[in-house]
Length: 279
Image 1 (cartoon, one colour):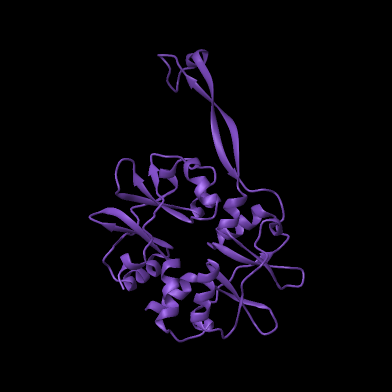
Image 2 (image 1 turned 60 degrees about the horizontal axis):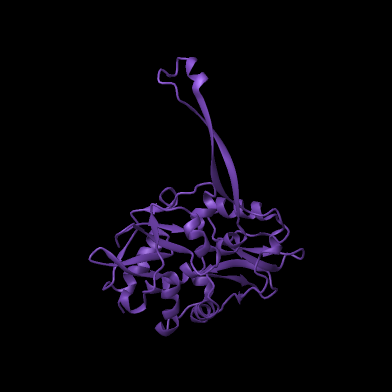
């Protein structure tokens, strides 16, 4: 199967030069987790900007400063197995698809997960889950959750209630939706004396003060249970990998907590873990 057979062709893009405000709305509505970045006036891909980029540096306003430059791309006639290899090798979620160096689509982890049930792959969830699972408490303040996710390089974490059972899950999508765009004024001093240099006090006499607007993304100071997803899709240890892929595709989710027979959290199956089945 070729990349062009399963890729998405209706692609939203960001442009440089540009500001975060221009793409913030697309991330906030939850329909996009990452966008290819093209140079204004062309169709050549020069970068990728993701929700995680916003979380890691909420004070930066310029797309060019946040994006990953020179991203991995794939020709539209390449086999989907090659797309799976690139996603795993570079630990990414999406690859811009190109023809003659111009973007024609995008292939994502979700696109690959959708075809797994038709591949008749045998195996259970424990064979593919990577065994690493960061979690937190449902009453943890949202800014601390954001920091936990940044430090653990996690795009989602299960949340435990007071009984140490899974009470919810939080993803970078939920955090971006909770972001508040805070406007503020910054003051700058600029010397205007023609004879000014770093050794001269005379320049102080001609100092001008001016103010400029700054937009900052800020997470609310509320418990994470107020913004988390409460109805969590889960699987039990021993579940078939094809069934997990169906659940992810049907519910448009990127991860599923794994439980034991006593409903205790023992791991997290990510959609990227399922991509290993292509190899």
